[in-house]
Length: 363
Image 1 (cartoon, one colour):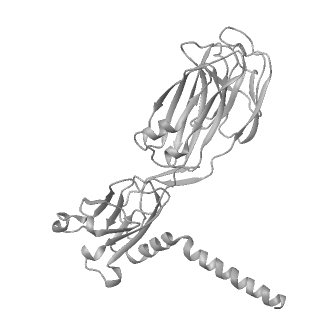
Image 2 (cartoon, helix red, strand yellow):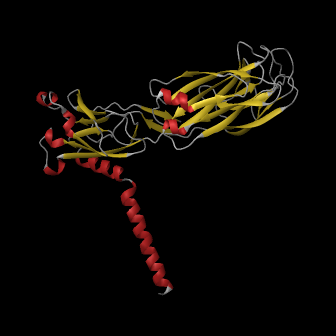
Image 3 (tube, helix red, strand yellow):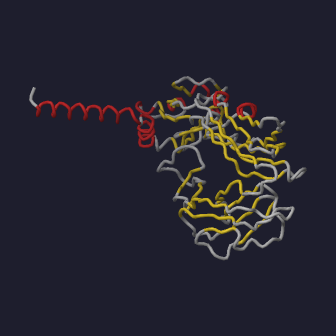
């Protein structure tokens, strides 16, 4: 076979592969696009896109149904692939909602059908309203927000505060059993503030962390199996050596007025003047707030890029001892990109009249 024929055959095979991928890549998007175009006179919105495994499935009709239909069980109006056991109900006179009897399977594509012809007189090709949605794939992220001194023994013990985030709703018992905190030779206690509203943002506070004469740390481990996630995570949070006064960590906080959070090993002496002792590259007239062993260094709102942060010898702890060595690190003031996030579920159709559309916007 000549080289030109081989090249032509390869091109045809590539085109065939691309075509086959495009047909299967977004079947749900195509299904919902067809639904938007064909059923705009009958359906104003419906569950689509990515949803929680705890979500209900909703279809909102353009026109209300009759009182007789409201008094019947709408469960038989729905069919799903894969199948979903549950029960439907009317919410008002034009919204039918299907409530699964158990959480949906994570990271799964679902096709739904509403038997529209059982509610309206429609053309033969419109008797079944077909739509699709996908459940979120569960995942997690653990954020250490601050390392602070223990109020009961500020010089000898510390606490760790942070937040454990999941991509989708997670049961409180699963969260508590999945995340563990250990420091050799110490008896740690963990206080959880479980997110009961959305089930995705759980705060924790680890107490009883001992500052020892030798370097030590708190091992934080996440068992993904307990959350239905196919990965584990492990990190070590360093604990300051007893009698060693230094900086433990720096991080950028962008909520409200932006600032750099500088965490020290010891609680700081209040009312000390930190001007020139803690600096942020390119920033003048900094404002400082001392809270225990943390200092908030407020910067201008237009700061961007990677900046050097320095803490100089002279910063004093609660016992009036000075920090002995220069600390320096870099932080990233990355600007939030423009973002529009819809808070409502479903799809907006052209015929919708007077729909309230809640959203969140950044920049």
